[in-house]
Length: 301
Image (cartoon, rainbow, N blue to C red; front, side):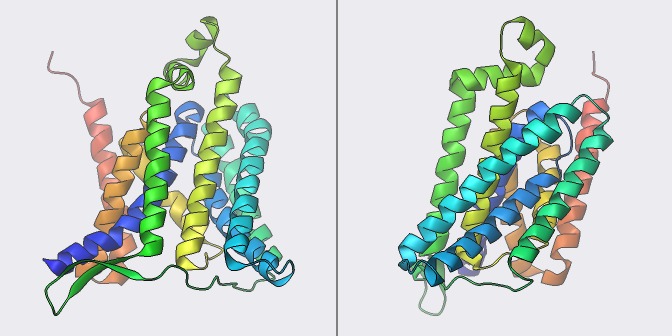
C-alpha cells in the first residue's frame, strides 16, 4: 500500500500540470471551437524561455538564484501574454469562421515556429536549472519504505490548484464567466443581447495562454529542462483529454486531466514504462469514441 501511495504521490505533480493546461485549453477552445495545436507550443516555449532568461539573469546580470527564478518566470509569462494576444488577433479571430482545417494548419505552423525559435535561441543546447527545493517530505513510512513528495512538487501542485480553483470560481460567478458561457453557448445570440463577444473571445484566449505559460514555468522548475518537442507531446494529450471532457466546462476538463495524470503515474509504477504513452493515447481514443457514441445515441423518448 505504501508503494501504491508513492505512485499516487508521483502522479500528483503531473496531474497538476495537466489540470492547469486542460483548464486553459478549455477556456479558449470553448469559444474558438477549433483544434488549437499552438497551445502546447506556448507551454514548451514559455518553459524554455524561463530557463534561458534564468541563465541570462544568473550569468550576465549576476542575480541571486531566487531573483533569477523570479526574473525568468516574469519574462516567460510576459511572452505567454504577448503570444496569446498576437495569436488571438492575427490567427484565431480571422480564421474562426473559416474551415476548421485552416486553424489546424495555422496553429501547426505556429507550434513548429515556436519550437524552432526556442531551439535557435538556445543554439541547440540543453540548458538546465539546478535542482531546487528537492527536500523530500515524508507522508508515510513503515521502516523499510517511505512515501515522499518533494518541496518543489508540493509548491507547484499548490500553485496549479489555486489557479484552477480561482479560475473555476471566476467562470462560475463573475460577469466574465457569465459572458463566457453565453458566448460559448451561442455567440450570435450573446451579441444580440449586448455582450462584447470580441472582447470575451480575446480575454478567454489570453487567460488560456497564461495558464499554458504558467504550466511551462512550473514544469521547467521541476524538471530543470524541457525538450524542444515537449509542446507537441503535451499539446496532443491535452487536446484528447479536453475533447473527452468537453470544451464548455473548464473545471471538468481540469478534473479529467488530473485523473489522467494519476492514471499515467500508476501505469509507470506497475507496467512497462516504454508502453505508457501508447496505452494512454489508446485509452483517450477509446474514451473519445465512447463519448461520441453516447452523444449520437437516440434518446429513449
